[in-house]
Structures are given as C-alpha cells and as structure tokens.
Length: 241
Length: 225
Image (cartoon, rainbow over all chains, first blue to last red; front, side, top):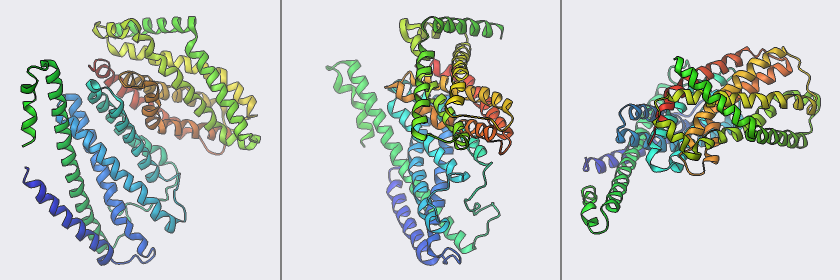
C-alpha cells in the first residue's frame, strides 16, 4: 500500500497535466460561447466528484450508525471535507462562467445553483459540528446529521424545481447535445479529478488514522500514569514505520 | 404504543406546567419577535403593496429566530439535577420524550404566532388577496417543520461546546426547503398571484420525512455516550 501511494501520485499528476492540455488546446472551441466554455472541464468534473464524495459520506454514515465501525466514520469525515472543497470549486467556477454567458453572476431561482449552495451549507455545518462537538459522541452526532443532510438534498431540489431553471441541461442523459470530442475531454478530466480526490482522501484518511492513534496513546498514557507511560506509547511506533 | 402516549402526555404536561409558571420561553420569544418586527418595520418602511410581497419572508424569519430562542431552552431544563441521565437509564421509550418536547415547542411557537400575527397585520397594513384559510395549513405544517428538527438538533447540540450558537448553525441549512415553502406559500396567499398548493405539499413531505428521521434516530442521539 505504501508503495502504491507515490505511484498513484505520479499517475495523477500526469493525468491532470494531460487533461489540462486536452481542455485548453485539443478540445474544440464552442460555437456560441467561444473559449469561455472551457471552464466546464473544471466545473462539471468537480461537481460530479463532490456529489460522489457526499454520497460516500452518506453511505458510510449509515454504516457507522449500524455497525459503529470507526473506519466508516473516518471515511465519512474525509469525504465530507474533500467534498466541501470540490463543491467550493463548483460554486466559484460557476459564477465566473455565468457572468460572460448569462450576464449575471448568480441566478437565485435556479435549481442546480441553489441546491448546490444549500448542499454546500449543509456539509459545512456538518464539519462545524465535528469541530465543536466534544470528542466522545462526535461520531454518532455527525453520522445522524449526515443522514439528515442527505435526506434534505432531494427536498431542496424538489422545492426549487417549481421555478424555471436557467442552468444549461445536464450534458449527459439530460437531452443536451455535446460534441463527442468535448465529452471525451470532459470524461478524461473527470478521471483526473477522481484520481486527485482519491489521493487527497487517502492521505487525509491516513492522517486521521494517525491522529486517532496518537490520541488513543495519549489517553492510555494518562490512564497508566507517568511511570509506565513509555510503554503505553508503543502503538505510536507502529504507525511511524 | 399505549405507554408511549401516556409518557408523552406526562412529559408534555410537566413541560407546560413549568412553562406556565415561569413563562421563560414564551416571554423571551414574544419580546424577541416583537423586536424583529419593529426593526424590520424601521429598516424597510414598506408601502402596502410592497409589504404584501415581503411580509411572508419577514414574518417567518421573525418566527424562525424566535423559535431558536425557545428551542435552546428545551433541553437545558433537563440538564439540571441530571434529569436527562435519569431518563436515559429509565426503561421509558426515548421517542416519548422527544415527542413531548417537540409537541411542547410546537405549542409554544404556535401561541407566539397567534399573538404576533395580528401585530404584523397592523404594522405592515396587510390585506390578504388570496384564499386566507390556506395560511392555517401553511402555519401548522411550517411550525412543525421548524420545531421537529429544532428539537432534534437542540438535543444534538447539548453535547457540543457553545451549544447556543450550534443550534442555528445546524438547523438553518437543513430547514432551507421548509423556510422556502413557508415563505413562498405565505407570499402566494397574501398576493393571490399563484396557488399555494404546491408549497403545502412540499411542507407536508418535509414534515413526514423529517419526523420519521427524528423518531428513528433520537434514541441513538439520546444514548450517545
């Protein structure tokens, strides 16, 4: 596993560079929007990645509520953190594109914009809860909130669905038409983003694992008292290999 | 099932009696929402026609903020003398406690709304153009949507640092679809421009989904140690 990490890092770096080249040079210019549209290669893959991470957060929260497996909780935390970052990228790149194309930065009544924003708010509140909660019960509370958040997302979508939507139709499966070459570039970009997200999640997961081991070792140390403290810190060395 | 309702009613009666004697939650909510109404009236100073469009938003924002004041006090009472710990070790179903608390909050916020709505009508010169009876289901479903999740999140934020700040941070993002339903529904009735049925259905769906979720997860939250 340890050797796989640098290999995957190199693969991701190469893939990201190749995807950037494809997005900026190879992909054809849009007939109506010109070069502005190229932001789609960051916007859409980030959105898909964020949604996928939030989905993993939901599933692992449920697994945690049923099984009380600490790894499931860690996975939920990691996915929420990285998902919020990708969701932020979506919310920042969206207005940058919307300003020249729609003439406005933000369309308040639009279904996808608003529901993405609300989703971002929900997961930020999830991270705030994890930060503010006292250590022992954080996992359960956070898992419950994740379930509430995931239940809320379809309702948000449904509630705004009533208004006319301004966002372009989804590029896949939404009846929108897209040049196959553009789609190809988009999918390669998504693959690169997925690899990147996976890499970040992985290292964050390892960090969280170490963090919890250190906490546990500290707890053991204070339980054992100072005299035997040196022996209690043995689990630390395992993770430092 | 029978014992669930007996226990719910017992806890509810206790809460109502406590509230009747102290009037802590009601007084603070009433004064708070009165302040919000007055400040909004100064800030916007609307004409009758404009106020019809913004009153739905103002009224529900005032009630939302005021409800948070009451919700924060819901569980604080049970922390004194380790009442909540006693409840945890008792064989009573956790959902009875939750239902009693949620119903109690629903009652207090409803009283607040009944007292404050005439004031809103006076301050903003409101005159309803749509079918006014539709405001009743919107108010009932909307209030339940706020208090059911509010009661749940208040129980959750008991275990956090600075819990008074934590409650709105957790409650508001989740409540956005409900707030949208209440505000848009009320505005639809006040202006009479479009039908409010969609919003009533939306609030009903929200209530059913989250009441189920709260009842399903409350025991886990109560016993989270």
